[in-house]
Image (cartoon, rainbow, N blue to C red; front, side, top):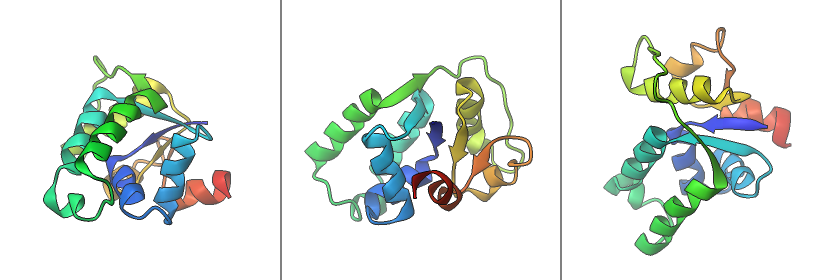
Length: 137
């Protein structure tokens, strides 16, 4: 199963390893699922992981976090979103996430973002809980 994991779930999974997002992040690391990641989405995650409020909640040293980000490139399937034009009506910042889903033709986009979830009638977008309960239990 190929999935795009939104940045908010990567962050939650790293901050709260015992949570549903934590289980999804572990499933991706263990190749139970194939996480698909575009370069702009990887960069968004890298920047978010540097926010002081996020950094305080992740139990990794700076070196471990740098290693994790490097390994993320190898444990995910890369996708090129060049040429994919989409528009998330209420949040243009989410365009890169939807573009990653469309370019990759992944089975699902996993997110907690309401602006993306509101597009679930047109795209395979589900919450972490929905995916977890259906495929990872």
